Length: 294
Image 1 (cartoon, helix red, strand yellow):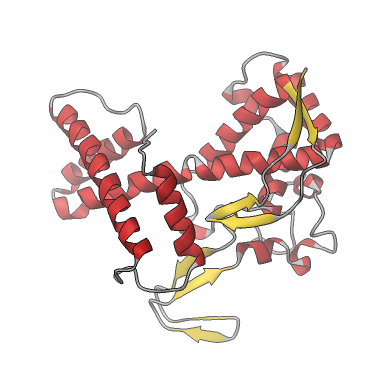
Image 2 (cartoon, rainbow, N blue to C red; image 1 turned 90 degrees about the horizontal axis):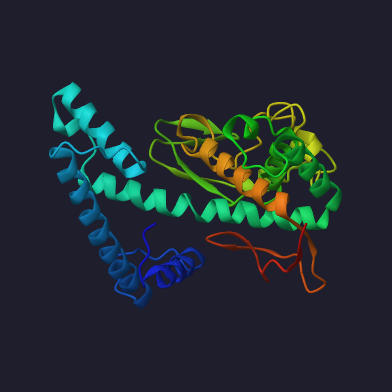
């Protein structure tokens, strides 16, 4: 994992930007200068890593052991097959993809696991149901892929956590042609914010118990959980849906299995339930729990 002394400062700068005014990033204000400097440092490190991988590929070394290697191999193959380098990703494109891999591959999954443990502390009966399912499949053994794919209760729990507390409370889409949405006509090229949190808490789609933690609503899958098949958007929707959604759920299942095989937890008296957006949706005052080995 890429880590530099700039990591904490970068996070705080993004936070300030996301909660600040909509001033252009080109203005030379203090936070913008910090963001540009941090971005310059991160891009320099990434370009160095990419350069080393590309050199290794030229020398015939295999690089398909991580996402960057797979991306570079796929891009090279695509350009060779099409015969035009302009059809492939540029170095700048690859740098931007690496930034996305880094943030989306760690932050969102950790937020999902945090909320899952909190809600299983608030609802211990579901913690017991999940542990029983996990122990029935794996006992104390290391979970395997086949078993993880059979975890129905755990999957239901994750879906309900993502519904109540999606990592991103809104997503941005852009119209590619003139279209009408909700009686309003938008020209091509308009940026539209989709209020994921609002949609996930809409009683017209989810029923009068919309604010309750009820994983059983997903017992027959996502398509039958709500009245509107487009009302569940933790990973986006359509052709631009998150490419890493299956991997994110897989690693979350693995982590929760290892936790529930070894630990039980309950809510600490000091916990105050206050979801708060800090780039992603976090517990505002932390996640205080009492944890015991089993």
